[in-house]
Each structure stands twice: as C-alpha cells, then as structure tokens.
Length: 379
Image (cartoon, rainbow, N blue to C red; front, side, top):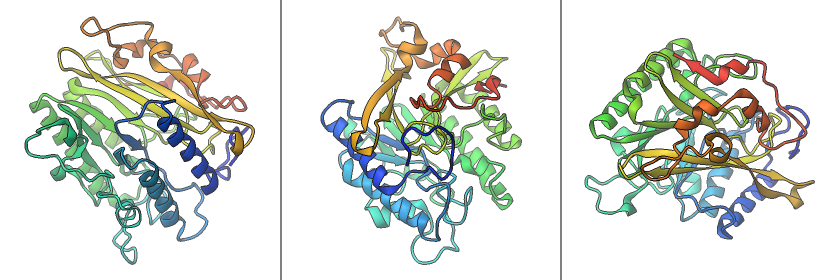
C-alpha cells in the first residue's frame, strides 16, 4: 500500500504486512506512553478490502484483524462495528448470512471462533450486571440489547453513559431490498434504546460505520431517505442525552453537523479516517476524550487525529495531526469544570477548516469536495 498516494484507487488497499506494521507502531506508542492508553477501542468497520480477490478473502481478512487486536491489546476492551465490506455474501450485504457453510455466518462468529473474543461485539465479552458494584464492570454489553443476526447492540461505557452501536449498512440504498424489515426493526430498537436512556437519565454515544446525510465528495446520499427521516425524527425526540456520533466509511477527516433548525440544537458526527489509504488519505487513527462534569453530565471533550508518515514502511512514524479542542473550540471552557464540550464548538466548524485536514495528513492529495454545503444536515 502506498502510504502517501497522489490519487484515489481501490487497488491501493491495505495489505497484510503493512497492516501488521501499522498495528505494531500503534501498540508501541501506547506501551511507551507516547499516546494515551485508551480505556476501550472502537473498530468502526470495513475489515475487508474493497476488491474481493477470492471467496475466502473475507474470512481471512476478518480473522487477521480480530486476531491482531487480540494479540496487541489483551488488556484493552475492543468493540467491533459492522462495515459494508464485511458481509460474507457481498458488499453491503447481510451481517449474518445463514446460507454460509460451516460455522462462519458473520464477523461475530469469526471474532469468537478464530480470534478467541468472548463476544463478537466486545472482545472481553463482559455482560453488565444487574447492580454495578464497581467500575471494573465497564465497559459491558447490555445482553438483552444485542442483535447478533442484524449486527447492532448497546453497552455501558461508564456509569450513566450508554454506547449504542448501529448497523447503518442496512440503511444504505445499496443494501438488498429484502432487508427492509430488518432496517425498520433496527430503527424501532434505536428509538427504544434512546427512550430507555432517557428514563434512566443517561447520556448516549452513538457509533456507526456509514454516516447519515450526503457525501461532501459528490452530494450522493449515504442512506435511503425514508430511513434517514425516521432516524432524525427519533433524534429530535431524544436528542438531550446524545453526546455525539462516531462514524467512518469515507476514509477522510470530516465532521458533519446534524442541525435541528426548529429546536435549535446541534449534534456532531465525527469521522475517523481509515488505515487503508485507498481514498487518498493518510493511514490514520483517532483518540476521543469522554468526560463528565460536576453535574454528572457526560460529553465529548476532545478528539486527536494521528497519522502515519514516512518514505516507506520501514520508516513509518505515528504523528499528531491536530486536536479538535485547539482547532475548533477557541477556549470555550465549561464554567462548571473547565471542560470543553465539543458540541458547543460546532458553530466554529467550517468547510475551509475541514479541507485543511481532509486527507488526514497526506500532502500528496488534497481530497475532493464537490458539495461543501453537505457538512451540515438541516432537519
């Protein structure tokens, strides 16, 4: 894989040797305290390349990724989010395909059987107890709120902080038509989860692979319109506890703003670029900070983007690209506990600022933004 490509190309995808090198560098940086040790890791989907070379490539790719995370991060819980390349049947296919032979029907099965994960959504497999006795229970899966056939689930990251992981591949117009019932069922589940969080006075972090809205690359919609309307209507009812949305898919460093005009609130969709540089980006990872203030209100307080650079894979280093707080917040400090809330800084997000880091640190390619207005989704 070309680390600093000059153009976009599906052929310039992440190969296994380069993947191992990138993972080793990440692990060493954490071990040497050059970047903070995370309390948990989110894999935001697409473990498989864009071009499927043969029938076993999906199983091989997923096994390689899940195993590597098991080896490198034994003491760090890892969450998995379904990506559109990860289906056994086809791109944008089912999460769980009962027609597959043998024991492998989904990425969930691969993580458990081939990589020793205790659960295919969370590596540790910890289930939330009925009564939390200590912080050692976090993160944990809400066992009645996971769907191992459609690929979505809920977890607790900390006290009063719920993670809702959606399978947004189902919402794409590229998803098979016969999965409509599954998509609508997931949207109802999403509403029920947010309602439960509201009743319990919790805060919510949402994670997904394909973001809502339109692509700033060409104005194409990411989701089917009917699914998007239900999702936004649900957010309009339960937005008070939502601290933000984490997404990926485009391989670019972006922020989208979900802007409710009538009720005058904003929710940030924060993209994480990929390790694959097929879209003209630099290989990249991201570190988010979650904090609670003196009123026990959870919020995203910062996000730091790191990128890999070097003439060849033997000379690669992991470098800080920028951090959200310094770039967008302009020292807007929370008066209660001197914390920046990323949501409060969204008014400072502009397309010109996004363009500066759009390719995640690759100076050989500036990216393509043909629809700059699509950084904002008004509803």
